[in-house]
Figure 1 (tube, helix red, strand yellow):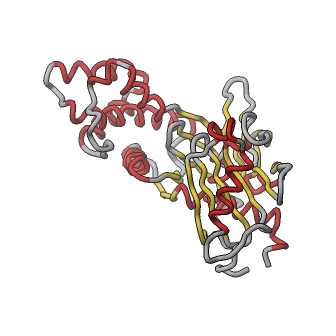
Figure 2: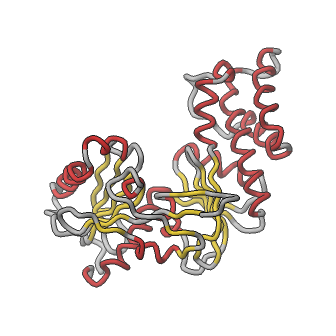
Length: 312
């Protein structure tokens, strides 16, 4: 295996985005292509034409044609409303066995889609698609611990000896969006302000939530009232709200999974920094991993299981 030879195409196909990379066998991206043609777009435009267009962009590089390379996809392209359904694997499931659930698409070339993971528990039902591949990319076969993946729907995952045994999804990012656009708190945030930073207002909201997570709805209204009474400033509203929501998430996750294990944080940008600060403040030991690299490494590990003999 050499680091400068393209052996497969990796694709992370989300609800509203497409990201593709020309990959080596050791997980390096030689070229990339990305666009807004997610699952929702492809529901009307079709998946095959979008993939063909992005493969043409990759093949147009100096690296030469890629028409014979296999393609491995993770994410919402494998959902019920996607290209083809790659049925969920049920917990507990080993991450290094994800490739066993890959489904081949009836299209030109060897194109396969990885499955998601479902927690088929009536008391705690949950699902993920795309995150399972990131988990594969950041954990060793015998890994035991917690992984946090912040986002619109943040995930906390408990892994034991390389198997996903349980996980919880928090609608933290979506709640922030809904609250700041469609509730009374839209008047409590400065919509032109930059992304919330881990400043004093964020830390104040965070600590309030960690100390009293069941009081979230009261704390939310208090945020608005404090500004009306001139105790707080609108400029700090978004940061304080972020602290309240993220702190509530972390407090609940800590009660479910404990804080004794280090947390691998898969993230990017300002949100990664907010979660890193929040986790440290809550007493977690944190190791940060770039989200895009996690996807690339996970897709590479699964691809080696599927086509490794062809990569030499």
